[in-house]
Structure formats: C-alpha cells, structure tokens
Amino acid sequence: MTYPKAVTLVEVGPRDGLQNEKTPLSTEIKLAFIDQLADAGLKVIEATAFVSPKWVPQMADHSAIMQGLNKRPGVRYPVLVPNMQGYEAARAAGAEEIAVFAAASEAFSQKNINCTIAESLARFAPVIEAARRDGVAVRGYVSCVLGCPYQGDVPLDDVARVAKALFDMGCYEISLGDTIGVGTPVKARAMIAAVVAAGVPVDKLAAHFHDTYGMALANLYAVLELGVATIDCSAAGLGGCPYAKGASGNVATEDVVYLLNGLGIDSGVDLDKLASAGRFINAQLGKTAASKVAAALAAQLA
Ligand code: HMG
Ligand code: MG
Image (tube, rainbow, N blue to C red; front, side, top):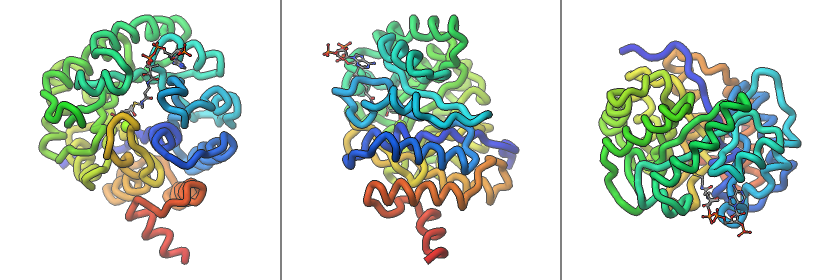
C-alpha cells in the first residue's frame, strides 16, 4: 500500500472542539491552548468562528481571540466565516485565512446556517470574491458527507456536487466532514472517490472525521491509501456541532499523530507536547481524555 510521505494536520480544537463545550472558557485560556498547540508543531490551527453569538455563544470572543494570538511564523490561523458580515468582522480582527462551510444535506444546511445549500453557495460567492481581492485564502467545508442527523443517508452525488461547486468558486481545499461520525472505511473511500471523479483533485481534499462510533482512525487509514494528505483533527478529541445532536468530537489529534508515526508519515508534531496541550484543555473543562493515546500517555506520567 502507498501512503503520502507527509500529512498536513489542521488542528480544529479551538473552533470545532470548543464550539460545543458547555463549560465557559476565558479568552486567555483559549489563547494559551492555541499557543501550546503551535508549540507542539501544528502549523494550521483553526482559531475561532465569526458566526452569530446568538447561534454559537462559545465563539462570541472571536475578535479578542484573533487580536490576542501570539502569531508564530509559519503557522496559519484560519477562522470560520458564514457570510459577509462574518468576513468583514474577521478581517477587521486580523484574520488572514478563512473557511466557508456548506453541507451536502439540505436539512442540515437549514439547521446549521438557516438557509438552503444553494442560498449558502450564493452567500459565499461575494465572500470568496472579496477574499480573492484581499489575498485571503479560503478553505471550503462540506458537512454530512457520510450521513446527516436529520436526513439519514446522503447521496454521494450531492457530496460531490457541493464539493465541486466550492472548489470551482475558488476554495483552495475542500474539507469533507463526517459531521456525526457515522462513516465506515469502505463508505469513506467511496465518498472520496466520488468527489475526485467529480473533478476535485485528491491533493485538494481534507478528511474531517468525527469519532462518534470510534471509526475515525479506520476511515482515515482507508482514505490515506487513496492519497488524502490533509487531516482535520482536534486535540483531546474535543468537538461536535451544536446543530448535530449526539455527534461527538473530532478524531483526536493525539490518535492521528500516533497512527502517522507508526506508518512513518511525517506530521511535524511532537506527540508529548501535543498530549500536554490536550491535558491542559481537558483540565480547564473538567474532562478526562477522550483519546486512548492521550490516556495511555497520561498513565505513563502517573
Ligand atoms: P440568521 O439568523 O439566518 O442570520 O443566521 P441573519 O442574517 O438573519 O441575521 C440575524 C442576526 O444575526 C442579526 O443580528 C445579524 O447581525 C446577526 P440581530 O439584528 O438579530 O441582532 N449575524 C451575525 N452576527 C455575528 N456574526 C455573523 C452574523 N451574521 C448574522 N457572521 C447565521 C445565519 C449563518 C449567521 C447563523 O445561522 C450562524 O451563525 N450559524 C453558525 C452555526 C455554526 O457555527 N455551526 C457550527 C459550525 S459548522 C460545523 O461545526 C461543521 C464543520 O465542523 C464540518 C463538519 O464537521 O462537518 C465545519
Ligand atoms: Mg466538525
């Protein structure tokens, strides 16, 4: 089997992880978490979301986060943006890279961003255009690529259509989200193959797998074999979407790094420093490790 020699990890813990946590965290704690992640070697850290604070109060301090970042050379800090209002606020706060987010399921699109898929794409068009003018890179997410909490099965054609639309609109990378973590390896591979067949090259794809049923690592292993070389993950396995009830966290970054190390794939991340960042945020949240790798590393320290 062939795998990519190196993989880019997109750490989404400070955004996807913390957007769903009930325990309120101060901006200072979030900033310390982000800095520890950078210290562990993560080069792309999704820092926050410029969404409505009425919808996601956990991200209400987005501007303070962007203004308080200890930006390190060579580290990118993208932020989620749902519309022009979010784009303008993100830019005013100093964001240099953004991510827009659509869904492959109509029902999820309505619940998550209060509009149809077509309306969301129309809403993103001027955002992407403004970003292009401003020299701001735009990533595109597609949610519910392996199942929807409202609709159930999601046809692969719908996933491929939305992914291709975002790619054609100018997104430099398409992150494919198993939002509720229901995928299994053969389905994950078929989904990636469908998106590639629709015209999005595999090196422009990222896997964003939640781990609700414990399948995320197996799914990642399956899509690594297809050449996917960008993986979204969340330190300590934090995460979930407030509009996808029952969905648990993203695949834990600790688990992914352990897997990649075992496969001889370079991620540039120091597992011990990463695990320490995970323990820090878990302690702030009063949680124990959701990641088996993190728990095993913690046990060695005890
Ligand atoms: P809406 O209510 O339809 O928006 O929400 P609206 O345009 O009608 O405006 C209503 C109010 O919201 C107004 O305020 C606007 O100013 C305000 P009011 O006059 O009532 O005081 N507003 C905003 N405020 C701050 N920032 C903004 C903004 N836009 C409008 N950008 C909206 C539409 C998209 C804003 C809303 O539905 C929303 O914020 N949704 C975000 C939901 C979210 O963040 N979900 C989690 C992230 S997605 C995810 O987790 C999946 C992913 O991880 C991939 C995967 O796992 O699959 C990415
Ligand atoms: Mg997610």
